[in-house]
Length: 562
Image (cartoon, rainbow, N blue to C red; front, side):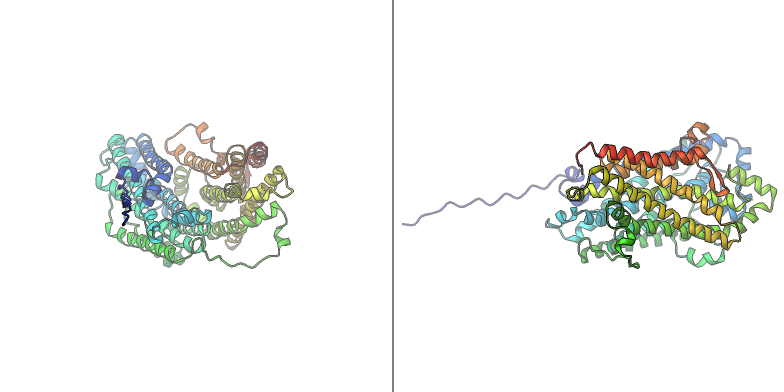
């Protein structure tokens, strides 16, 4: 007798997810990446679009008449090539768009490029180090596809930011135009947005490629250094011929004649930058597909014995782990400071040759006596505060990772109190900031000595960068200890950006002095000219040590959190 077993029904094919669901992060790596980056995208879009509208409105209100615009044109052209090395090429600055392009165009680009660098180094290298990519790689997806979709998501988000910037530029021309020529054509708005996007992708792509070999931190500071050094090399190439061959290697030089808001277009110059970005991104995807997860090639440095590094407790371990990153930030800023300090004497002499030029410089850079080497270096210090602040943010990120990665649960299993761990690891971070500051000071001092100027004053003045970085770290300690460790670095980064925006927008919008005083850097005096503000120094120290104390208090009273 034959028995007939019932047939099992074939499993129903999974219904494809709708596009809207995928974009909200379900069903694809691309959608998940868009979903995870939605907050960063919102902040970047609001920041760049809002600041563009704000500075355009400020230009219209500050220079509402033709006479004021003519005076602005005269000032922009009378400052000479030395000052233009800082301010950039002045083209058609008598119009609202031309002035915004001249004074704020590089700022917009750097903001977009820094976001691209941080996002693209985190998207694979950072996730591989944290272990989350191990789970993604277990899915039936090739590693090449995972990397490609993550990169495509960032490109899509950056394109969205560029579109918002184009709309903001066009709306600013329509809403705030005061004189003929202030309107911003749609072609000019698109030209600005496309320039910012391809340039940001080029530097972000460089960081993305390097991160597959060196890890996230090293790739980010290398790409960041190339980003900041590019405009200085390009702007000073006429004064310092030695910079010329190096400047030709940067996308800043390739696109130097593309100034769309000023009415000058060089669309062809964007093609090699876009090609370079594509090569970097594709090479990074291929490198990720061919290498082991998290595999990096460390930069070899002479080893030190554990006793020399102090690796016998939480403070020594914290300092030792932050040491490579602190040294990298210090060496990068030191190299830049050495070059600028070495040129400060000759540049200051050129500024001081003409009384009319000195008066012009005072109006363009109020509060800075660029006719002296110290005043010139003080202007550079104002630009480097944001670099020192972000250096502190990266060091904080490593400090917070002890708890967010779960390693702290193992550490605290040893006979070590919570308070002792928090105090000692915090002091290790502050020691790394001190080392970074010492390296910066050494570079500036060597440059000043080469120029034949007093080296001690600028070396001492560089300590202001360390004070600001320590204050930022103190705020991060307090946030991480009282609330969540994962909030420490973002909160510190917000403080750095807010300080920079106050410094940037307060003069442009002619805001009350009380607004300018909200920035911590406004209370540090002019340290490069040996003029210190005791209130600012005390505030920085109070934020650093008081923030650490608050963080310790909060950490001892809460549970461990991711």
